[in-house]
Length: 220
Ligand code: FES
Image (cartoon, rainbow, N blue to C red; front, side, top):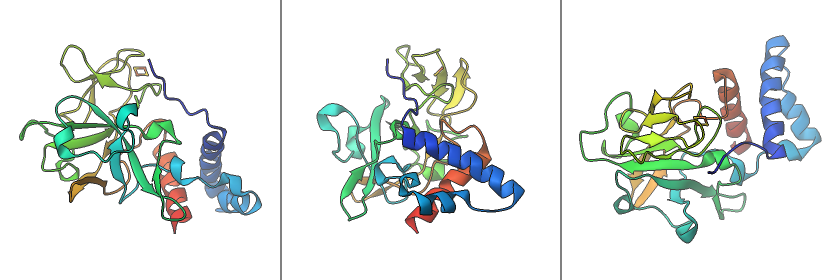
């Protein structure tokens, strides 16, 4: 059983900053991040810890082929795990696995099987879809159900339906797995933006929005 939790001290600091930023904005609009970032660059996210970003390509996460670009023909109704891979500071390829919560679940279902609330415009041809693979309950990695009825979390039996936006169909998860918007570019599966909803471990929209802005500001 793999349990993906944020334990990286840099990420823990990032969460603190996000919360602190929200508090700071509420009381006076002073950018704590700017202040801390200027004083101590360790508060900046490294590229391998950034979330999936527009332009990233999806690569295999399985050890035997880690880093190889995923092709549509690799996908089926069985879960394939992926990492986003983007560019580093010097233009080199960087797999964003420094944050284990960036692990993704990919599926390709026959036409017509993926329905709302999946955002079909964020799929490839209504057939290929990407989600966060991190359970929204406590951060475990979700797998295919051995009953053939969607996805099941090994930690507390949370269940999700990947054909319907990964809505929760059983167990304790509080919300669906977040969908990641993708498109096909040549042979590559390419990310077209941030997760469409708040992924684990975020617990408030304000915190998630603050984090996205932090990333955009850092990339600007
Ligand atoms: S961590 Fe997935 S159901 Fe608890």
